[in-house]
Every structure is written in C-alpha cells, then in structure tokens.
Length: 337
Ligand SMILES: *[C@@H]1O[C@H](CO)[C@@H](O)[C@H](O)[C@H]1NC(C)=O
Figure (cartoon, rainbow, N blue to C red):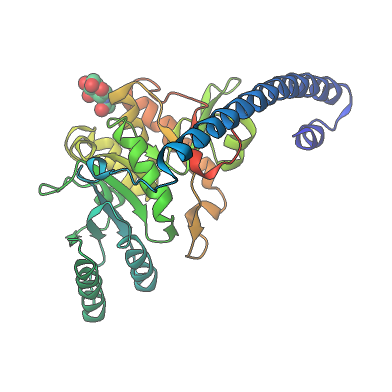
C-alpha cells in the first residue's frame, strides 16, 4: 500500500505530505487490525474450548455415533437459472455449460443467441447430451436458446416470459466459477432477493475539479476498499429486473448501449440501485478465465465507461449508485476469522 502511495507522490513537498498522510492512515489501519486480531484470537480460543467441551460431552453421550443432519429443507427451495451471453465462441460455450450443468441447484440454462446463423448441429447435439447426462444423474435441467434478430448488448437482459426461477445467474461464457462459489453467492442472494449479488466489483467516484464521475476498475476497488457495482458478467439478480430493463428503463439508455456496444452492465447496476436505494453485494469467489483477453483490457476502456456513467446519471436525473465496503465471504473457506 505504501509503495503505491510513494510512487504516486514522488514530486517534492506535495509528495511528502501525501505519503505522511498515507502513513497516518496506514498506522490507523494497523492499530485497527491488530486490535481486532487480538480480539479474534481470544474469540477463536473461546470457540475452540467450547467445541472441545461439547465434543467431549457428545462423545461420551453418543459413543461417537455419526449423526447426519437432514438439510433437505433448503434443497427443496427453487434454484436458479443461468443466463449466458455468448458470441461465436462455441468451444468456450461448451466448456462453461458442461461445468455449470454439474452445479446442484441449477434449474435451467438460457443461452442468449445474437449471431446471424442458428447454432450448429454439433452444438445442439452437444447440449442435448449435457441435458441427458444431467437427467441420468437424477436432475432435470431445462436448456433453451433465446434467439435475437438484432445484434445488441441489450439482448442479454431481454425479458423472458417463461422462466422457472426468480433467481438469475448472469454469466459470460469465458469465466468459470466453482459450483461451491456459485451456490454460496446464490444463498447470499436468497437472503436479499432484490439486490444484485456478484463476483466482479467496480466503483465510481467524483472528480471534483471536473465535476464528473469516474469509473474505477479492479485496482480502484482494491485501493479504495469500496465498490458500488457488481458486473453482470458474473452476478445474481431477480428476474423482475429483466422486465424493468426492457420495458421501463428509458429507451435512450438502451439506444446508447446498442450504439456504443458497451455498458449494459453499468445500466443494470444503475437500474437495480435506483429500485433498491441500496448497494450490491460483492461475494468472494475463485474465478477462472478460460477465454482470451476481453474488452476490459483494451485501451481507452475506462474513459468509455466513465462516459457511460455520466450519461446514465443525466438520464436517471441523479446518481443512484451507493458505495459500500461490505464483502461476503464463505466462512467454510477461511480457517481464521
Ligand atoms: C427509478 O425508480 C423510480 C421509483 O421506483 C421509478 O419511478 C423511475 O422510473 C426509476 N428511474 C429510471 C430511470 O428507471
């Protein structure tokens, strides 16, 4: 942290004040964390001791008989639908569909198809095989295409009438999350069903001198420790937002997105924030990118994204995005909290 601050303020007196301020902030941080670590250590020891007592007592009572708790109550709840955007990358599509079809609570898959040609015979056969394999394993999986005539990024949020679940997991074809991560995010979403719950956080802030909003990528989130959006390349949201996006959101925003071929994910973040008045939830998950570099690694990306943010603020009449620092972590994966 200090390194970045130092190189940023490398010019004379201003830099000195800057780094001193950062040092102060850093000291506060250290004090805060060490304090809480001590607290956590004590807590941890208490828990360990309690567990030990409990285990000893349970062992003497049951003679270590294994008891499995029935968790079928949570399984009988409705699962989620994967909404996958794809574009001329059949191999990636096959890979991700194969992977996600193995996730237990997945109910259905919708592939958003905007290519001029229909899906190839080999792709159709492949997908049929995936569905059959899943049903051989005792699970029904619905798999459908959503065909579009026009090639627009708005297609990925087109309203779908016959969805089986309220939960939608919007995912790009070139990122893979383990089923445990997806299901953890799904369970977080179930406790906040109006909220967007996702794996890829982004942030906005105000450039005071220019009186403009700036869009911040991953490094900004890391540096500031806050975020105000989660991208729809990997996020859960309620199906009602598809209807809002397609039918309620100003058409000027959708037109802007079609023309610029960008920012449909930012628009979705605006839409949900306007509806809820609350921030999204960032869930920690392992991410595996299986495709080549995407649009976000092209130059001039941040400027374009900032333009979108300012355009949408003008259309909404205010800035609906709310910043937060909360992050949901699966406590089963951290041995020390
Ligand atoms: C924002 O939310 C309000 C209240 O729900 C709604 O009336 C309005 O149309 C929304 N604005 C946009 C631009 O969607």
